Image 1 (cartoon, rainbow, N blue to C red):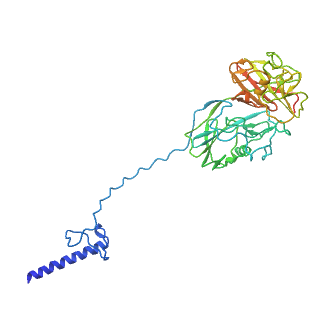
Image 2: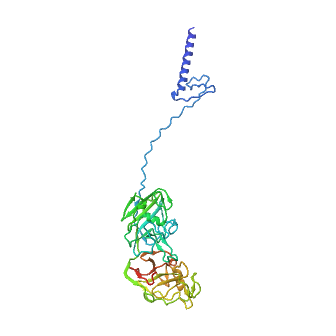
Image 3: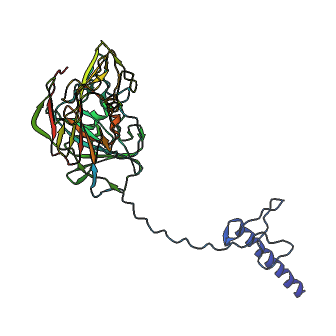
Length: 423
């Protein structure tokens, strides 16, 4: 009887323990998972007395505590000013990105705000503009703000802020007291300018200004940024470069204060070449598409000028180049002043290489009419002067354009002129 009582007691104790464990498991206690049986009841986790059940949950492996991450140091995105790079005036700076000239929505001859497209002034200075996209420098196009001649406006015109080459220089007419802004230049260019768009390049835009060796981040309205004399403006789209470039320029020589008067029939310089075409020059047949005709109409009539210096000595350009007994070429020379007459019935574009072909003389970056040596070319558009770094044969002849060849000894000054037959 006593044994039955003990047996009954152990059975009751075991039943209570199992019930307690089941309740604890249902409440999520003890870290064990729950296993739902097909009849909807929960099977207790194995505690050493399996009975007829099967353990349903494999004990979880304790997770390794995560090592706290070390805070990263913010990257310094402020560029520094690089050491100055020596650059010859006229050098291309950057990779080509845009086509030359103003766009159709830019300056095409109409007035833009207080900017008027007129004949080039007589005195210029410049500011410099660099544009970077994700650390890559892009070349500012040539001839922004330069409008080609028409029959009605045979000299063409130029805005008081414009470019002449791909050096990044923005040329500014200082014959008046006007000041200019970056917004005016972009209006002439016909390109957008904002904190998210520079000439069609989109992204975050930051601006930096270098004035006299001090680099400053510009935080105002980009269109209002003033273009001061010899300042350098850098627009950065996207990732900034580590350094902002700055330049020391080898500028053209200054103009002499002595004015050379060009008189029809006159002579400027020392005699060097025989007058007229050479045996390999034009004999009446078309040369490079330039025709020779008698009594040709002169509806389009402009003048350019050539000056050739050898070791500082001014060499007179020969007269009667392009003039034959039976006809005159559309480009020809009447006297020894160096003036090239462009006289033709309709609007055409002519180049310096065509003049030399009519003359019958070589022209390259190493040879000017048989004179070889260290050759430097300067182009002067009525006071807007720069060094020309390309093939001189490709120089376009426009109204009142002077092309000066320096062969050998460098010039200390460039000539200025009083032209005859101005239009």
